[in-house]
Structure formats: C-alpha cells, structure tokens
Amino acid sequence: MRIFLGGLFHETNDFSPVPTGRASFEAMSWRPRLQRDVPPSVNLLGYGGALARARGLGLDVVAGPYAAAIPSARAGAPVWAELVDELLGELRAALPVDAVYLFLHGAMSTEGVDDCEGEILARVRELIGPDVPLGSSMDLHGTVTTKMLSSADFVVACKEYPHVDLEAESARVVDLLLAQANARIRPVSAAVRVPMLLIGPTTSGPLQSFVTRLRACESGPGMLSASAFHGFFGADHPDAGAAVVVTTDGDPALARRIAMELAQDLANSALAQGNVGMDLRTALEAADAHPGTVILADRADNSGGGAGGDSTLVLAELLRRNVRNATLGMMWDPVAADFCALAGEGSRLRLRLGGKVGPMSGPPLDVDAHVLAVREDVRQAAFGRGEANMPIGRSAAVRVGGVDVVIGSIRHQVFSRHVFEEHGIELANKKLVVVKSTQHFYEAFAPLGKVIYCDVPGTVTSDFSALPYARLPRPMWPIDPTPPVPAFIHGG
Image (cartoon, rainbow, N blue to C red):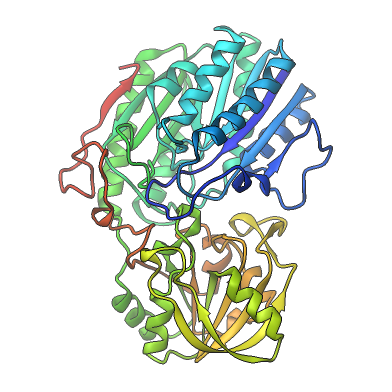
C-alpha cells in the first residue's frame, strides 16, 4: 500500500496579539523531499506517530511536507496559499496513492478562510477522487465542520489534555486507512455539535472519567473511532464549539446513537467540572496555606493558546506581596534576554521586563535584576516527556526580589522542568513554581506538589465572557448560562 503523509498545524487565536507569517512556520517545519533527517528543533507530534506506524507496517510511504507554528493570530492569505500549494503540489506529484493521512489541528483559520482544515481536506479529496481512503488526526481543541466530515473518511481527535496521546491516535488512523484500503471496513460517521467551549484538563475529575468511558465506547462492537473535540475558545466564527464524532463499520444508526450519547455525556461532564480557574488573590492564598510546593498555572498567558507569554500580572503581584522562594517561567522577552547576556552572569542591572506585546500583557516592570544564568542551548520536552528538543532561544534566569524569573527569546509555553533546571533553579527547593501554561505542564510538574490553576485577565483567560466575540454562535456555554443542547451536524 502506498500512503501519502502530510501535516499543516496551527491553532489560530482570533484574539492573539501575535501576528503569523511564513517565518512563523519555518522553525517547526520538515520538508522530506529536501531534508533527509528531521531538524533537531522539530517535534513531529501526530505526523511522527503516523510516520512511524506506516513505516513499521512496511507500507510504501511518501512523506510529504510538515509545517507547524506556535499558536497566534490568523495568517495572511498569501501565506496560507503558499503552504497549501506546497502540500497539494507534493501530493499531486506522488499520485497515484492508496491512502492519504494528514496531521491537522482543527482550529486553523486565515484571512478569508474560517475552516482551513475543511478546505484542505476538500481539495485533497478532489485530487485523489472519491474512493481513496483519507483520514486526519487532530488536536482535541479543534473545531469540527461539515466540510471536514464530508471530505474525509476519518476525523479523529486525541483524547487527553495534556495531549500525550497524539502519536498513538495518529498511528491508529493509519491502521484504519489500511483496513479501509483492503476493504476490511466501510467507515460511516455521525457528528454532534455541543454549544460549549472548554479548557478542561482530563487528568482528574469528571472529564477524566469521561475519557475512560469514551475509550470503552470506542472499543465496542462495530465501532471504529470516537472523538470528543473540546472546541477552541479563540475561534470566533460560526462553526466554533465542541463536538463529538463517531465512526462505525457500515452502521449509520449506531454512529448516530453513540454520537448523541457521548455528546450529552461530554456536556454533563463539562458542566460538573466547570471551566474557570481561581482568581489570583485566592490562588496565592491557597498556595500560601499549602505546606509543600505549589505549582501555579498562569493559564491566561499561555503562548500555547495564542497569548504573548510576556504578561507581568502574576509577577507584579508576587513582588507586591514580597513573596519569597518562588520561581516563574517562561517570560517571553528577547530584549531582556539580550540585555542579560550583554551584562553577563553574576551582574546586576535595572531591567524592563515583559508587558511588550499588547494591553493584555499588563505594563512592563522596571526591576532590579541579578543575573543568575545566561544560556543559548536550553531545550524542553513536549508535554514533559521524551527528548528535550524544543529550543527556547537565548535565555536567562534573573532574581527579582524573592522570585527567580526565567526569560526566553522563543515564544513557548512551559512543557518540562528543563526550562528551570537548565538555569540552575532547583524546583524541589521552591515553595511556589509559576508556569505560563494551561495544562501541558502537568505531566512534568504535578509530581512536585499541589497544582493550582489560576486565571487572570489575558488572551487565554478561561473567563470567555471577557473576550470580544463578534461571530460566535449563541447561546454558548459558559458565556451563556444555558446548558448546552447537542444537535447533529453530520449523519443525523
């Protein structure tokens, strides 16, 4: 079997202050036609899982281009056209193929196109014809559309948040495509929209239990896949919201029944778990009352959701309270990192820190900083596991009052302890560890102590009512108190 693999991955936040250009994709791209080996700074995520599985099965693999960018605002139409033309051009050159796998996000939008994934899948379907199996694995924070579902045979999301199962779900899509190509299965799908937006960790609580039930349901007779998309709060367009997609082996009635049951289960689980973190005052009081180490997640300044990563709101409050024995990372501030490098380790300088990207970053802080470390080579590990291959650029650790602050020059959320420990910061000795991340820090940091989710004003706030939506369908929980009512959008 000859299979083509491609990837185009971007979580687009309509409220992000950070623009997206072609250069945004360059550092996280791989072009197998031009580069034999994957660049050391590139994490292939789901594409890598599919590639390993296809090669392990002995398939004739045509590895197409992979391009990803850190979440940010919509790219311009020329950037979008160039990326898609490159992907489709390599697919066209590879024809004929027996199957196509694509690793997509599910929440990519550009100027003039709300549903980039649906557009890509439709254009691929036009190229390969109606009978060639086509499947895609996506981030659970994607948005499901009828265009996606009418073009692809499989639209599958990872199930965990943090997304530690991206590779495994992608590998499973390859298995399904192989089975379809060999006429062993006949996929039919149904999808149900759930009008809600989630930032729901699956590491505890009702959503953890929901994922257990989702997996059990997926392994039932006649089932091929079951996915729960949480939607993306940064998508401001008519298709936004959560959804459940179920694919069965030739049984549309089963697909409809299971999709509606899971959609209602997802809604009930989300309502029971809630969606908003503690306010900063309450979070710091809870941290102070806890006898051991506390991991405080600065969710609203998560660059992994489109934020600038340079918000000063939490740091300013720590300094105001004269908090001691604390550390905070990672502040995205290339200028401050350069100044620390220029001054050198051990130096003391007056430093303007953060608050540069936009109004949701808060004001810059003018601080007296002691430079503890300067590095050019620190890398972190995606989702806190595996090889540390994600560079943070020129970086520095500075002590400001009682807080050790890590500054990076590549905008990334905190995934792993390398961000701190590679700068000589011993996390086990800290009372408070502040991570600019929503949930992907969890696997690496939760073993250190108590995790507290904190919400302050910002681009990735979980108080969605604070965001200036213009095109979002309403009602939408939790912006509106109306309990979400699931409804079919495909196969109903």
